Figure (cartoon, rainbow, N blue to C red):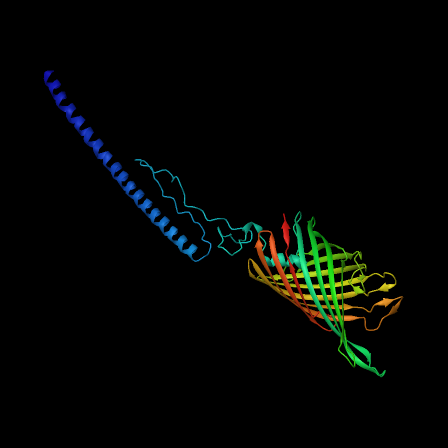
Length: 399
């Protein structure tokens, strides 16, 4: 019995020592993994710090060049937990790139001095804003656009005139008529349900005329006159008739009524107002980005006032618009206009019919999310056309 107890006393310490050695052997791989994870963590933190330093240096260089520098967040370091089993998911993930907007663009975080910032949420390029101004696109429902504008037109016409000398002899001379028209207008558009739009135009005009009549024995006589007055208020309704599909273009129908409430003349100067007119128009739009082609045809029925009928009118126009950039578009167009002879008391006046063309050059630039600058220059083709014209407008969008 005593011998067995001594043998047990020798076996127990040996067993304990074996267990301790086995435990130390099991802990060694875990310690090695812990050291390896710590080394990887240190390497990740060093790489993140180096990347942050490079981004800051790049941002400073871009700002020095006067451009907007996008701010990009560096990837966050992956911090695995020190555990003998398995590392949990990282506590932070790399920064995600901003989701693209509906127009496929992201706005710059900042703009350099002297430049305009275009908000990506506007989702309307200058091309689309210009198409809205030309009537080829309608506003979304619930959207209102107010467009103050200023237009200058210059007319020069040479007409034959009879001139008598002191002896009573009548000779044929040339009379020069000059006319300068200045028109300020406010146009309001409102997007309606069912792809339709309501339009209202409120104009005001100032006219300056000059008539130079030759004389036989002396200098020419120059007579000048000026007049101002309100123009005719026009109310229009437009509706999308067909959407672009394949070879088919967008098609918009428009009816415009001129109330004829403006001043017809003042001080002997004609102000081109005072006659009611109903106009029907069809606009076709075909887009091949970055180009857009617009074709328009119209017919206007004029109504007689005080036994005076100014004559019906008709015409067409063709235009091509180029999206030079998301903030700028260019326009080139041609318009042809016809007007019937005027009638007084049912009698047509010879030589009062008109037929002329106008070449137009235009540019649009987005100034802010809801503000656009539109300019257009026109060159008249024909004796009845304005010699040249210039229009500047500032559409303001209210969402």
